[in-house]
Length: 84
Image (cartoon, rainbow, N blue to C red; front, side):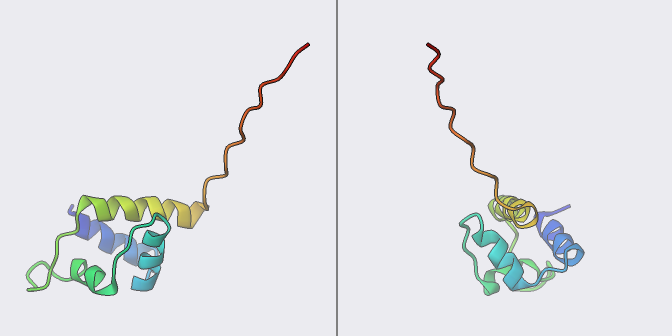
């Protein structure tokens, strides 16, 4: 299964629009445009088809985790205890 197919299936399964995907990618500071997204969702034989690269899929999945679960809580710094 190609990265393009994975992106298509996730978009349909989660009922995401292009704006939603752009916002999810922005959660991990990855910028893209509607035009770039539409190119990866085209049919492979279309002249404007673009293969979805691993970096885009990886960032989308990382952003999706944040979108669905929320950001990770900040870890508390351990303060060394001073036992006297």
